[in-house]
Image (cartoon, rainbow, N blue to C red; front, side, top):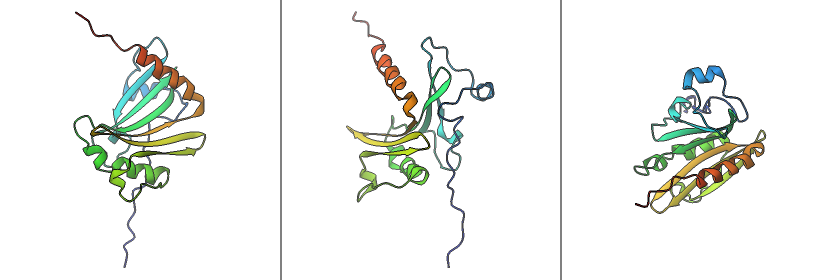
Length: 168
């Protein structure tokens, strides 16, 4: 006899969708976007704020990238800066599978070291899980073709502007 228990299958409720504007009502809840002369802004907020049913703790972050106050990408990532416990919990992988669709993780999902791409509703979603040295990097990245080139340009500019250490 199986009990008919509801299964939490809610998607994260992000502040807004790809391409939408950072409105005054959003600003009232999350503050003004930082001033930036090139029109690119980033905002990071703990994932539990948007995903209350997924047991994400403070090790899971949502990063919004804005171009001219429009959401260009949403990145939900595991912060493994202290240890790999966020990735080892399997919460982000399980969320990706439940929300965007199942994918082959091989015989042992704990060792999955690859990516998967879904194209949904004129957006693409990338789940990426990579072991670099002893640290896992794990994220769900959401964007669309319209913003892709602008984001690549932004990332390249960001790398070029890194502060140079004083040689003295």
